[in-house]
Length: 415
Image (cartoon, rainbow, N blue to C red; front, side):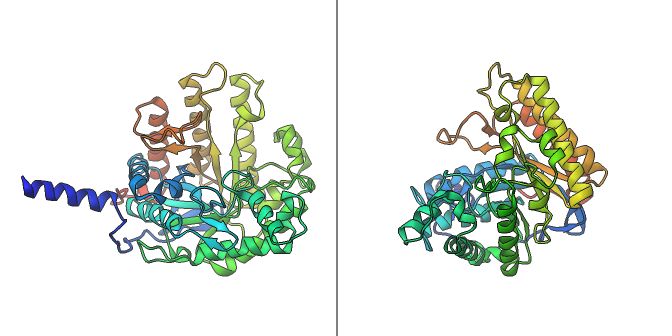
């Protein structure tokens, strides 16, 4: 009996706790690269069927809740999902990563270390954003507040894009993250193949300049800076994909009206050499709250097809649907409505991918683990709960993996 207890204890420690145990870097599938409109991994096409889990670092900061990260990533790998998108920031506030400009909390950084190490263990790649456009978890607003504390004459959150002090503060954060050596794998983030890509910002906007020129200039400058420090990883914008003045016809046909004032420009923002792939997010329920379900699905089809077409023919780069979902608090919501949204998005992406087109995958918003009521909301999905939506997610993963490297004979998902 004592022997059995010891075995159970050791299994728990190895699987669920890195607090007192250092692990060597696991064997890696290598870096994801780009060839034309496709992602490549080990010489084969790679497709990014995955999920958002912005909370990974937060929950992993506390060793007692790291099991939530483990369970979520293991469940995702079990469904054949290949990408986790998460935050590489938490600026100020509770469990902050950056507690003040240039000052970092080691325990929180170890939470991100753990998340990357666990993704590596189960064979999931990661996309990590450097900062938020919105005040959630700090964002531009916190940077501007810090700049004011340092005597900078800033008045708007959008000074983030033009003020020299703020631009340097952002670059300092990028450099800190890229040079971070993971305490579990002993690999610097900039050398870690588990990380597929960086995003400059989550959903960048600049309402101070609706022409889009300010945001495009910032993206160009910061993308070049990131690449000067890290040439191994892919890079994207984190954009919602709203069209701008470079394509006025697309603004009219595909943008929500409110998006025309956010200073974004899908084509100009991504038509930059240092940006490797295009990003688009889709939330028709939020943008068009008065439309019926059929009209919402029609818009989803039209919007996604338009972005894929432009990624293919204009940008000549891969495209990822970086966020999408169906809120359960929408009027008259049914599970069938969520299923229809997922099926519609997945089908459009699969048709393109099967032909070797620009659509490289979709990341649903958002995955949670069991016992995570603090992050449960109208969009959250737990893969351990049986539902028709989860079956659709698994089916898409299998289909995408079959046309990518993971579908080749002899390849198995690691878990």
